[in-house]
Length: 255
Image (cartoon, rainbow, N blue to C red; front, side, top):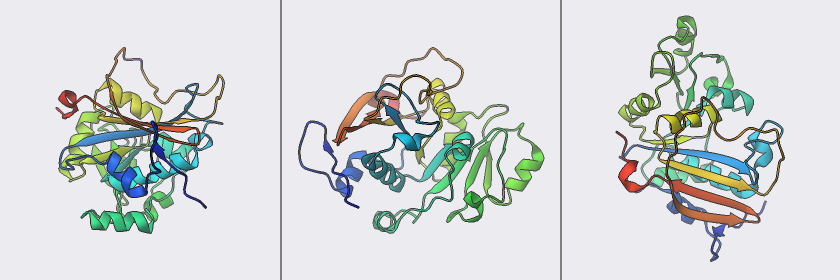
């Protein structure tokens, strides 16, 4: 399959994987950084037939894979894991080679956020994981489920009734997982925005209009907040536009 050509929106040469990687790399990996990655239709839908895969394009998939190679941990809400049919996460050989060349472990850690712990410890996402996964939960999570999951994953408690995203970031940082890459879902993104803990938003505008019905890429209790973001770059490929927004520098450091 021919690799989709991706270039800067204002024109220029087609970018290689290494050049795209450089565009998304964080300058100082020691500084905690939380990136979220979403796809949306041009009229604001976050899914097609209830799944994000229906909005995906080859260039979106290419950047999606590159963002995984850059991170220390891929973070996903349990609802998205179930809805999108996640399996064990394993990077391909070129990504592994890149990570080795840059002093990183072969594979990032996979982390699932779940307050209720409605997860099957026998699922292949745990049983076949190349690196022991993490489950982030709360104090009030059912004890029996927590103990069962602790057999197959490292269970981190970040809050009493609801996952405190700032606490979660701190717990991951204490484990050396400073570069966090979140792939959803909308409720988790809504928590990040409400609690002001997201540093970067990568948004793919897919060249489809979906019409009414599908939800947005954020969900949850309305917070009445507005978070300013600065456009870092815009890429394009056959009608797909890939946007990278970051917090203004004065706001980017985690409290």
